Image (spheres, chains in turn cyan, purple):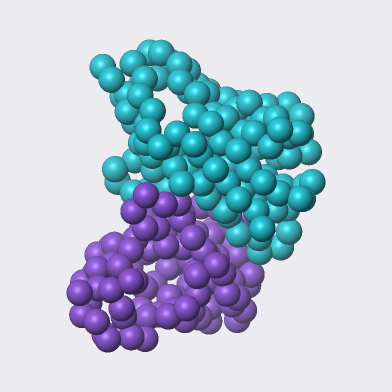
Length: 115
Length: 110
């Protein structure tokens, strides 16, 4: 079974600085997707970034980027120039590339941004 | 384009009562999912559907039933609510391996 582990229950960062959230996963599959979702206090699950396992290039979305290490099964999220609005719970998630495949979530990392 | 919507947003039930949560999406997505989120945990899959008229069990299906009579709607039912079903419930629809979530329903069972 696939598992996703986020070893940092809480992280904090100063506004305008950079923070990295860690995620590791376990799978025997070779073709899959990885995601980071953000959940602010509103509870809405917001897609932050998506990585396809067969792509070696790390995904980037504006201030958000990932460090995808397939052999190490590691998928960290870097947030640059942190803003107050980045404060939220961040979830790492995995899905196989098959029909109907579900998302497997990590436990989440609560990010605090200090002014 | 409203995306994924969920009805209701909040609900309080007594043990043994029944209710139905409604999820609707206007993106014409084939796949839809119901998850639950408990404190300190990520989302866990309850049931899912790969198309109109089809449903399948997820990771934690016990105590729940689902129906997908129309492509745009995915209903989650609790026949006899238990306190262990107190949770936040999320619906999602999927396109091209990415799932898009509704705003959630906070359910409390007393």
